[in-house]
Length: 281
Image 1 (cartoon, rainbow, N blue to C red):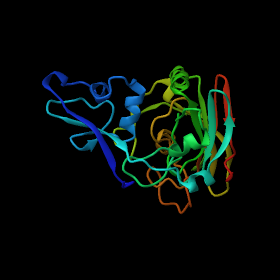
Image 2 (cartoon, helix red, strand yellow):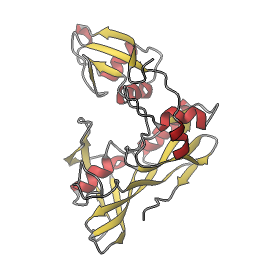
Image 3 (tube, rainbow, N blue to C red):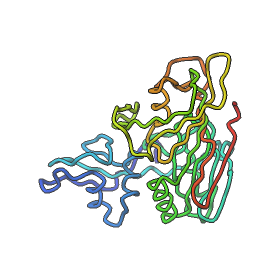
């Protein structure tokens, strides 16, 4: 079987009575036993198309729309993944892995490139491991793994309640004077570039920034704490505040950095905490 292709599982044509229904709810017609988070995960990972195109969970269904559900072609865990990741912590309910920059954390639909997610069952056998957070391809640091759906749901509840601290270190252009909080809401409709809006986001979506060190070249090291991040949240927020991350070609500029200097250094929530150093500070 070709690793680059997806296998079509099922499809359904929307009827007039489906008009205005969100895609993540419409999927119940194809997966009647599924939970909301499972359906949203399928959509986010590109396993659902509407009229041949990937979509967002909140897309509203219209009459005649063809909704197709896919599954990935079976692919074994790549040896190079196992040689690059390491277990930082393993507890009864959760585990934490270190992922280097230049490695996908989650599988990409239709892509032959390997990911850490594909290797979880080999790293944590008989634990029903579920990837609970994602990092950009060029971001290094901690990946949280929940052992079972109940534990994953528990973590999501912690996120929603604001009792999760995800702490990142970022090397940025510019030198802020004091700590500050970026409260802007984000528009993630464009999967390539997140837009920063003027209205205020809920507190769980804020980016809390603390300067740690400044350098003679006009750059500085920042600590950024978030509770429930959106796609590219820290990258977009820092650039909007005037402090783009070194090596970030989307929200910054081509500054010659070998990689994007953003690292998920620590995660903590009730009953669990894990930490790993950056290696470039």
